[in-house]
Length: 611
Image (cartoon, rainbow, N blue to C red; front, side, top):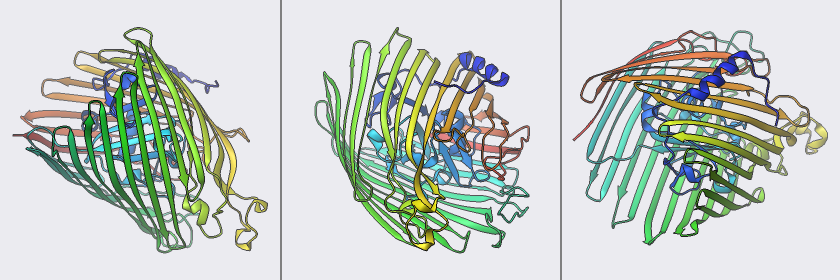
């Protein structure tokens, strides 16, 4: 397997990763859902799953979910400006449209623009994030080519709990949130509200081609609310309702000449789920869920445009724990409706899933099989097979192989004089190997992977491949090429008294297999290093992110950002916090001709308590 050349900074980062650590590193018995659709210990999975827990989220200096993901899970991001701007999360070199994002099991994102709306998701409502790195179509269906991000919102704790936070930063920034939770007999309730605002900087740089640069500030406001209600009618049974609402309003410089220099994008993201989970017999657990997600974008780039996606989903699942392992069987129905100014699209998909995970001695295995039958793109069968072997109590070897697919978006199929209704899904085949070591809170790991994707859906400039209508004289959507995504991830974690260290180095060779050209906006390497200190009521920390040079419409230079944080618990439940983001004021260019945020100082007050 090819690994990109390593420069001196990367060598230093690798050395740090081998000895690095974090007090919040997950133990071998961390329980996750994303790797198998049922709660299971990480040590029993062949898949590569990263857990970002509530303490890590609260203590992070990051101001957005995307920044937390790339710092903690090693994913890369592409963003059209600062926090609040359109953001793509790229796992193992896959695009944002090749990544599935779930909120409490509800799939979110646009089926027209073909990208999960990560920028609209607030940190204040999130309790935990699980990131499956690697193909997940055999469990989660279309678009899980690079991986799955599973966001779990806040849940009720024992007793009555309250929390509130207020933080203010330079550039007119603010973060306000409040939440409460309680358990009352058979009931559990958790609710929270939050608002974030940042005046921002100009999103575009001077000299951007085909644009109308405006030097004013382009900021954002995000309002969100979350509610979870549960009722246990009998032991082993629970009926739950989960809701998340978020509205993001972003000011953006025009991306095309000849139109107004500023416009505002408004994005509403809603996720609602009603479920029942119950134990039918010893080792037999059933889950029934109905959910709906809405992604509603209004933009004025070329006059008023609206892209609205509604997904209605129903699930029935049985999990049976036996001496031979755990068997999972599920049937699902997904109805998608897309409405724009120019077209309306609908499709429905019938789904069946089978999964088997088990352990025998030092060996664990997992096997998944899924069938998606769509009214739009036909039938797709995906599978995954892997296992892990405990070499010693501390060392574990794992391997996993699987295939995946990305469904064409409604824009790919229906957008006037661009979409082509004969486009095929993208298809990927992946293989990975991992070696892991864990001793208490200390951890180290190495994963190498290769993912080959064919039938990539892109703009097809060759008129001969497009429909005969003269409207397609300038090209159309098409299955244009193949891609090779391969690389390695080296990570480490170690606790040293009051100190905790963590680091990760990601190598990525992402290329067009037909031309040999590097895929745009992917760095050949990315390194993170974090140091945290806690003593009595005081805490401090620093994190460094190094992103290598990336190709785009123009070459993007390597970037290094330093974030600093400090906290003082001056009374029971009360914390005074400060953050200095991009402390060196690095000139960040997250995408060609776009500007990332400069240095920013924050000061905040947080309260967490209960009765």
